[in-house]
Image (cartoon, rainbow, N blue to C red):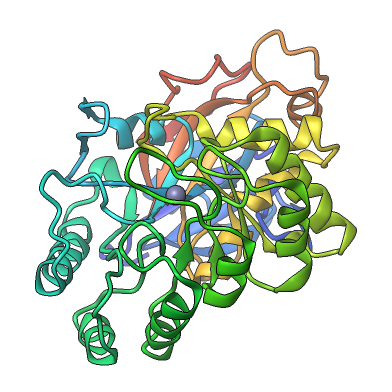
Length: 392
Ligand SMILES: [Zn+2]
């Protein structure tokens, strides 16, 4: 073994969930990681455990991909001015979130709304979160809120500078479908992905975006289809699911009943792979360290969705839609894992049954890029069994 390579083995896995909706449960008990990437998935007897620099014994518990929050509003490092809280990202890591996607750094005090200023801020945010990962969490940020007057060249410039996302369309002065459509198409032309705010206004000063605007704008993701918080009428939500093929994002800080309607509609049209989960935090509702876990349990228990499929909506579905190299346990992907077990005293006999009964799992460890980031979560209910680092 070369001394240059960093290898990790996670062994004695009781249940390995892939995050891939096409094949959510893998037959394997051991993962070999080399330099932050998954190198081999199989059984312990076939994997070189002895030469690994770090060995984690999962103690028969469950390994899933690191959870992805498809909708956050970061500002600077691990601080949010929204409720003036520190370390909200580290708190979310304790809830299993290893990747976050910005839907706009809209809470920045004094956020510039002129075109030069909004471009500069997007590029600065992209750089800042690329240079600094709070507690190791991957925050994909630098998501400008588009304003009237932007031209095609602005999107080209942003893309060339490394910006890959638009903030929620509709939070700026571009609110009409025909205006949004042109800018979303320019963004797409240069490889920038877009999300649109869906539903009633979030806070004083924002506005209503209804299904006609969403369909005309044709952004890549129907951002919080269940409202943030105020949802569209039911017939508009089902129409959005049925009339386009874009991402169906359900958020924690939305209307739960509308979220369940979107889930049921996606299942009826056999397009569950379009459903992705976010928190939409920090927000008026605060920060949600367990928001993604709570969405998994809510959709699974009240939406009659097998737990292993609900987990795909917070991992592989989002990764595929957003072209990430994490979110799925497969050779070559980032070694971002959550080791979890059913919570102590859950009525469920297994972790999957406990989630299907509406309980949250207990997290015992998070791993990002093949590095142990947290051990027993300080935020989830205690896991029945904890993994251990047996060699480090
Ligand atoms: Zn929104």
